[in-house]
Image (cartoon, rainbow, N blue to C red; front, side):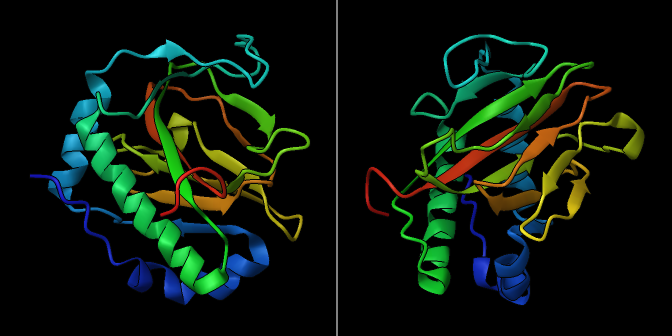
Length: 199
């Protein structure tokens, strides 16, 4: 049985002040091993569709992933989203973020592809407050590529390895990109939003 019980306070409290300054944070060893395995299994057996840009076009030179939005057809993913809702409540209690809902999709990048510089809020929009990426590949190394690169609030460029059981969290307005991956890369792209249902 999957539970995805995580003590967000213990994981985040020591980094919270730095997150306010930089807009980025890395959490490692987020979930229990059994929960992680069920996510890996589900991510490997679902039907992916080619991802499109916000205006609805497919541009593989910009974005090369295929995705599957998490819904009732992804029961393990839905349990993951409930844990993300708890994360949203944490940020509401500590930073008064006004987060009201969450959404996520599985993402699969084939070797040779990435996702060029972008912000998760298209121009003129601000529904997404916090973005997060959770990584699902075993034994990922520097030579495998696929790092996420983020320009933080202080203008510094931070590059992070897609390590198993790692959750990278950042302000949704920050520019970021996924570097070209050298092997197939699985992750969950996640957003905490200020619209729709109350948490």
